[in-house]
Length: 89
Image 1 (cartoon, rainbow, N blue to C red):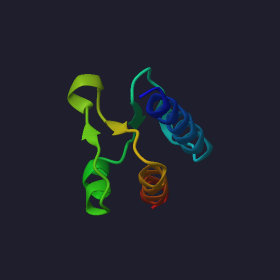
Image 2 (cartoon, one colour):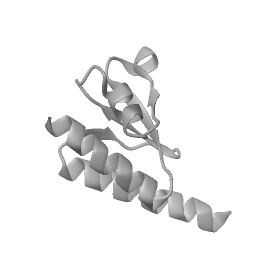
Image 3 (cartoon, one colour):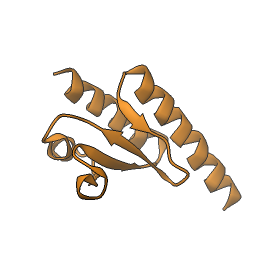
Image 4 (tube, helix red, strand yellow):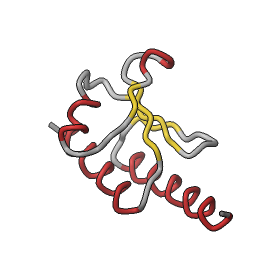
């Protein structure tokens, strides 16, 4: 279990840094997810259409907030790449 926690922490930090490089509004947490804020109204649906599932937490935190669980490196890379593509368009 300790190894899994260590891996999640490392992946979360990697995701956070990668998203910051891409100028995504990202917030680190002390949990197994990060928060991302976007002004793209249909971001959750656009991600879903590309096979990426996230949680819309706008009702709890304000418009545009989504929760992204930390997963396997390849899943995290998919989120980083697809969200960056969506944001650029």
